[in-house]
Image 1 (cartoon, one colour):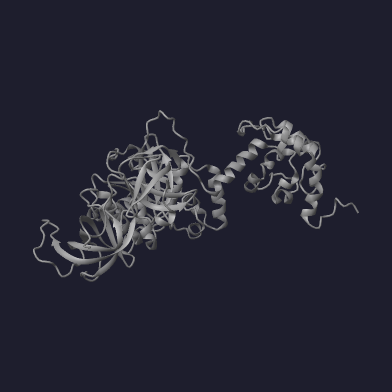
Image 2 (cartoon, rainbow, N blue to C red):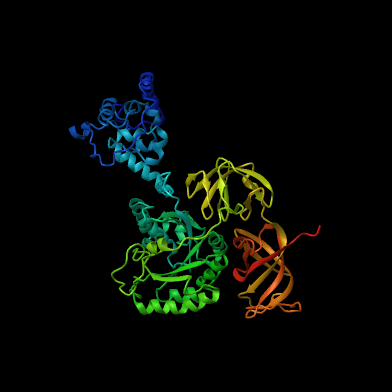
Length: 587
């Protein structure tokens, strides 16, 4: 019986048998290797290449182990002109080939794109359709982690203004879906990636979720359809560069949402117009109220209310339903502190179909304003001081060839190789490299979301809530401070000794109210002469708070972004407040 027809006992034997023969041709192959070859750019429009041995007859296929006979691969490499060092690669020894190729006898796909990239790229030439294949490989890589395709701007182009937009709202209102749809409409996610998500979502019987997967990247978020961490993505319009912060709507993840909102300049409150969904999101315990309030406390000045799911059969772009949602929301948003005339803008849309996000909708003749993306583009610029001291609250950190931190630059400007100080630990650090929305730059201005690689500090020594400052102007840190607080909802009374969790910029720390100093009259702003013994819901008071550890903070007057905070307890937001003065520690 012919040994070639039988399956070998183990694949290793098979490889060793053929290796010496192929290895003999190695020195000559390496000599012919063009070291200075131009990088290979796939010709996307090339006709699909069919090797001549395939045209001749399908019978003369290579042997069952998928290793191409040298004649065939030579032919292939000559025909594929643009691949310069092609022939040498095609003659490489078979040991380089991965198992994926052995299992697909025809080698028709050229093996699973991902694994082959390590194997000297042998697959690109074998499959023949090199241009097409490489394109697939590139896409395969991107599908793992949808990296933003931001074209580096020409150096002379004026820098676009950076705006951070946070999407907030009740669970399942459609925040991630709208985010994914915007990324698709502005070309940040290609169609193919979305088709892949759609396929995978269909397999899980969740076909309406596929857009949100562009932002919900980890498995847990996809399985449950709930955002947990704040997703980030970018898109550009003609005038501005936007960072989408996709906040979680679920009440267990409100702390994450506060971190997201503290970086935003602009909030988009997503409301579901579907019957029943709007009501649950808006009643006590729904997240619509809490999120709007937290966004205001986090310093978001402008709110766009997107009334989503207008294409739902129960709504069908009806003006009545839209007005009904609007009427319920306005009084509440007013109470939180947004001015309905200046700060709030309502618009109907549908995240799943993308209606009224980029282009106006024929089904909705009664809405005459701009669609969502156009509206964002037309907003006035935000005023930011680039000459102030450097302040960058840290949102997240990780190890990657050094210590990398993420955060939004609140004031000042940072450049490469600059010396900064990490507070409250007073570590002196140096900026090795700067990424603004994953595009490397040499300097950054306020309002940009940055990734900094730092030298001189270990990743373990940093906690979210630490602040990068300029050495000549450090931010204040301490444990005790006086603040004005408004009790928003709390069933019983609050007395000195009460503990809660403080969220201030990106920092989360346990605090205790050590003393109530006075009550403040909401209408007149007068302070009571005597010390109150307790405060209850809807009262405003000035209290002394003491944090469990040292935190960085500024007074609201000096630096509003780092002087406003929320107090939470038992999963609810109890109070919002602003820092009035810092109390030095008594030694």
